Image 1 (cartoon, rainbow, N blue to C red):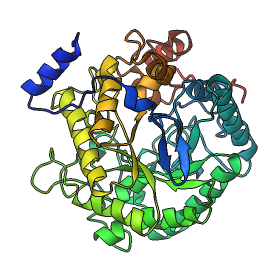
Image 2 (image 1 turned 135 degrees about the vertical axis):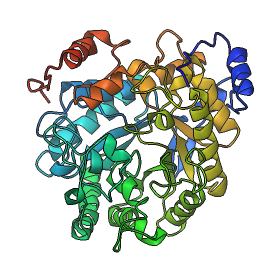
Image 3 (image 1 turned 90 degrees about the horizontal axis):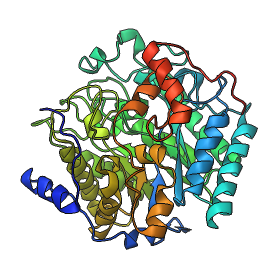
Length: 451
């Protein structure tokens, strides 16, 4: 397979290419449906657009938000998106993805209160409403780099993944550690509530620790092997977080329903084919989270950005040539999420990964909603490139084609090198210097930022 650059000048050209590949890419005639409100857990948000949790790698070394963090989130709030799903925030220092990953604790809680307040105020002032804010609580697991050096904490040995990130038996997390982590996520929910977030996300996606656990078929003990054991950490942590839930504070989860690995590794994978998701277990999990744990809203995604990037976020240019056309990744994502939505229709489900479609990402989102595949969409790379995306759709009916994400992969280069992350193309004044540092191998930690 070779890279096929995105070259569709019209919607008809895009639809024709999808048909040629035998794919269904839902594209609506217009975006009117995206201005409709969404109701979940007694909350009404004014539209179906949200900002996805994309790490900015711009915290201060102690985990507090920097000036760049404030800049990102106030711009997101001003965008008009009804949901701002904050990036992965670590609850333990050893679980940070870098020295510049956000990290919340009792000691810096006031800094997060100020960040959430500034975010909500920015949305209210610009658009007349505050965005619904979600704190994504995470443990980076295999991808932990607390001092910008790999320090993996893994569920089990996975030789295929270890070609990308070395690990040995000493890295396997103990059951005792996982027992303690359950209460840590309960405490994280309390911190999120005190900081003023509207919800906390117990994250289980993209190859991080919780996602590895739900696919750990070869792990012995109470957290591995059977489905019941593999889902124990996520369910128990959600239950611990639920102790903090009120009518004004919600518990949710962003869940990876397909990892793209070869069986027996990964979640949602088929024994017969690594390219075909088997969503029986993900659907079972979502039903149990709905019925037994009371989750009413979730975000669904797929893949591992470090290893199966083409599954997570289809692209034009990246670390490797993908084994499939990017439209295949788009079609897999919307079809898979739609399959889960059909099984739990009363759950509010936000979908992921529309950015590859550029100027048609808005029509794609509207098409997914109209076909009942999801209730709304979170935009990741596009929100880096064009933080005004939601108001463009809501006020003019379409995205500005001159501001869309080009899926060039440069933001991914920055985050993997632990440098402040944003759109190098569209926000060049801020991020080109960091990208030059990346190319020249220089350290550019934002030590001199002010929170």
